[in-house]
Length: 189
Image 1 (cartoon, helix red, strand yellow):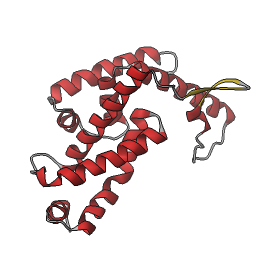
Image 2 (cartoon, rainbow, N blue to C red; image 1 turned 90 degrees about the horizontal axis):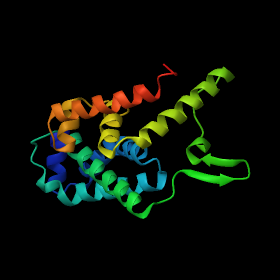
Image 3 (cartoon, rainbow, N blue to C red; image 1 turned 120 degrees about the vertical axis):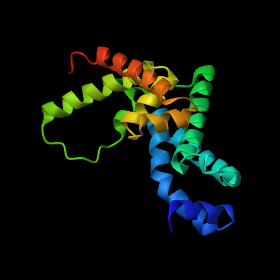
Image 4 (cartoon, helix red, strand yellow; image 1 turned 180 degrees about the horizontal axis):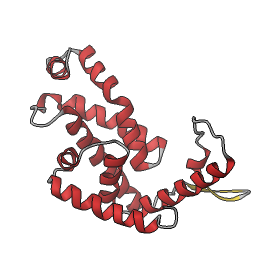
């Protein structure tokens, strides 16, 4: 069954069709939430809320855009809301105090790829740290556009649709984010 047929079946109340839609996009939604929010708990909350909203509003989906675009729009709006709440509440960052000093919780997430060269590991860790720092300094919109393009692989047109703007506006936002990233990573490149 193709995606359009799955959506129509889910709109008609077929629970298994809806479950197949969720399984199709669940990893991408969780990854997008994690990349944008940098918090497993917040990413899982956004994941649950996003699919709950899809379930509640699926009958309003009219195939004007792709299902992925519609879903990503929901996820990015939820992530932006979460980022705004953090700013208002001044929620704690991923940094925590340990006996060894200030540590980033993200550094404790095990990487699943083979690490061969210790120098390369150190360089990669430094680069990752610098990229994370620059990403945190981008505006929420710049960060969303940058991550959707480079981490999710979305085209600028789809990003524009997700954000409810034009492809040109998404392109300009990506340009600004990329320029900031290049300036900050100049000595690494």
